[in-house]
Length: 217
Length: 217
Image (cartoon, rainbow over all chains, first blue to last red; front, top):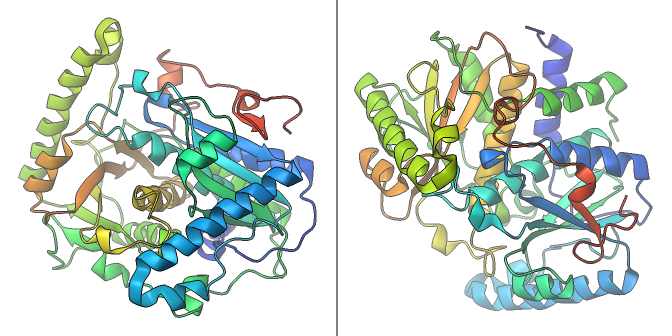
């Protein structure tokens, strides 16, 4: 079995550690070859029953990009209101980089998913799990290539589906901002901005039963 | 900005390409230090509003491991029936390695998620997206470390939640089989076994509107 070298293993942990959910971009085009490699990385993700439910809509039309921006802005305001006492904290955050990023993509669940039962009879949402793995592949590959990516989920999926002329049953799950950045945040932006803290791994791992944290590792 | 070397970039694409959803394991313990590194990798995943909704239950009790196996076997039979004309094809597949894998983990969505509105007002399922990114991190790190991992979703989530004494609102989304393997499949197992084929990337990428595949890349 082809083992990975120590350097290869270190590179993989490095990119996992250094990947960031980016909101600040430099308005500069993304090389077409790099974009293709990133989408190939996404397409190599695991999927439940090998259903490959991911679809990507590349937004190259400028008017459409502005439409997406308006859509996210409307949801940003609606979210702020729903947050109540944290409304002001939230409104201070930069939540998207739609107008600045070099490439804008929408990731969606394909239509016709109800035909796929394998691994989904009791957990139909496994299709989203597969799309998420694809996006994570892309995120890591982008970081290695020196490009930032941000996953924006502040939008009304029905309205975005209509805007991009998606068929019944398809559903957008991510607006992906991809592009050049001046620097990557040294820690998650929401931690740097005091929105919340990162938890300790110890609080995330149990043994045999929920909240049993006696020597789980 | 610290650029990645060509070797580092190649390592990241290599692991993305060589990661497999494994069902065949060698019954041999997983080193505790490696397990911790893999869970740390999971915990470095992005999460919507930095909510970190992932929880991992490490199954070290043998009787519990057998219970999980019985639960998956029951769902395997139920899925086979639901598949109709592909019932026989499905029953020939190996869908889990629960009794053989060195480490067995259950990944779950934490309870109390309804309090997290950031990025989830219109898309509450973003919590699952975050857990999936965490699992993908773990999957890639495991592959680099020479360990196989399989995501099993053939189970009744309510019954598994009860078995592991999960509180109301928590939900198991994956039984993760992790362990040593004799070899990694050269292609997805479901492709090798003729269950389905991998699609072409070109069929996954559109431009501006759904199914518009005119020069999307």
